[in-house]
Length: 269
Image (cartoon, rainbow, N blue to C red):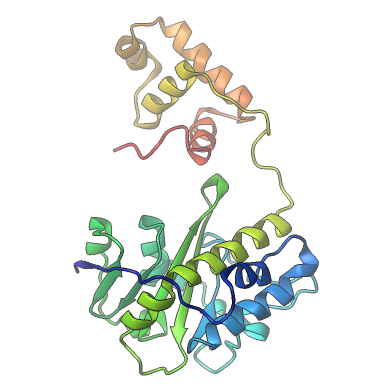
């Protein structure tokens, strides 16, 4: 299923861009509800409805400080058969969250294919049969948001007209704006709701520690890494152990995982 390359037009909107972005900005938990209402209104003015998911690996619905479920009580997904936020299988079976793993820029999609700013071969491999059944919509503008620590947020704007399958005009005219407001809303929401510190704040890995972890990440043993880098076995073990201490990791696997979350390891083949 080939992805089509498209071009965005310059944003022409009813309110100044700064005002729209400010209206969806979340600086504390108390801002969440009003920001979500502003996001809903921006979408509705353009004939769209909002679907938000701050973390595709989590089953917890997005809420405000009082526990109000945003997708239900603000964005209005309450109809029978349309309460997608209750169906945790969608994160595994819908093509939309899967596409957000492989793409970081906004795109739109229907049963005919993905329409993105550039050709992404990973999207070519995603099967779109029964798209409407698996995604509960005929077409969607999708805004991936890649957050710190490897968290991925998958968000969609779907047409209020359930039978509309072509969003090329809406994406061309409003795609840039929708990307800006959704990213601002999600980034603020995650910061406001985050309670755990996942990584030590002063963690800086050395060049040699990164080299060792990169090789370890693709399955090389300490002995093999020592041969590749022309260093002693003990030296390699020291660098990996030291990296683990900096990352507050309980073992080698977690050290690799946390280093990957911080972007030290890159997208190794």
